Amino acid sequence: MKKFSISKTRRLRTTPFTSRLEKYGVGGYTVYNHMLLPTFFRSVEEEYEHLKNHVQLWDVSVQRQIEVYGPDSYKLIQLMTCRDLSKAKVNKCYYVPLIDKDANMVNDPLILKVEDYKWRICIADSDVIFFAKGIAGSFNLNVKVFETNISTLAVQGPKSEKLMAKVFGEKIIKLKFFNFEYFNYNNMKFMISKSGFSKQGGYEIYIDNLKSGLELYDQFIKIGNEFNLKPGCPNAIERIEGALLSYGNDMDNGDNPLECGLEKYVNLNNDINFLGKNSLLKIKSIGIKRKLMGVKIDLNEINLTQEIKLSDETNNLVGFLRSAAYSPKFKKVVGIAMINEKYWNGSNSFQLTIDDKKISGEICSLPIK
Ligand code: THG
Image (cartoon, rainbow, N blue to C red; front, side, top):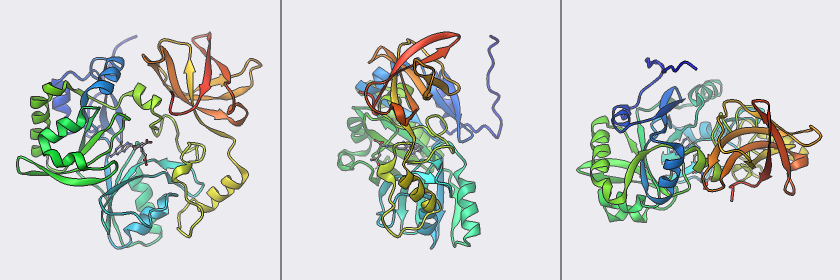
């Protein structure tokens, strides 16, 4: 097959750190929120092992932040999500499903409550800004909605605490999961949360000043050797095993939060007001007929670009495989699939066909253990 590269234009946005990624040998990109997101440097498998044992510096500027500012900011945020945010606190992060009037998933962002009237939605890959502006306009809300210029660096892995303490001081060790605070490095102030798109622990640094961001990046690289720091990026294998969902891959606007296993973030027994409430109440009373589950497949590589049909021995539809990657831990392909109700219980096996070859696999729970 002829090799090609993606032409970069204004629509396909670079990040403030693209020059650094290229200097340190980025191996591939995907596009996320119309922006470049690295997918690997040397190999996804090598970086999976490294992430679980050391510490990585990620450019996750693609987690664009939509700011909702003004007296009606809570009202707008709450209209978009089924998670009760009425008691949300400043300096905390909330993982929330955003849903439309039919209760279908629009996005699954992390929301930061910055001030009483200021919220930032760190979005997954869909255009939340237009959804938010549409609702603000039709409900005549007193808010401003805009995409900020903030870029995010994530420091992820078991050695992240020690590395961060070295740069920002020991008090960062006290920062609790899903809280954020402000920390100084070299007289520059950074908002930092204890969060990130891995299960290995870590921080996210929100950078609103390009120059200080680049200085910080270079400082990490300079002092990181001691902790075996390497540039990295969200790791497909690690996030599938850990059940960190990827909007547009595992689920999209055809799925509701109950089907996506997000019932923890669904609050229907109170008087909060959100767009999808009636639909979600109906869905809950009838019960869902399919849900996201883990799978293990007897393959040693896979390149999934579309969902793949899973069937049982008698060719009945089991579900659809939506994300997959080879796992060095299980020595098989692991994946996330939307599975029909009939196959939820027990250890169900299935078959799929790739390049005219029949392959078998089994259903398991999420996270994959
Ligand atoms: N960090 C920030 N913004 C983001 C992401 C992030 N925006 C895009 C994308 N990731 C949004 N999706 C997720 C998915 C999972 C989590 C965070 C964002 C996550 N989940 C934990 C879990 O499932 O174990 C914790 C959930 C909880 O306790 O509420 O962290 O990564 N800034």
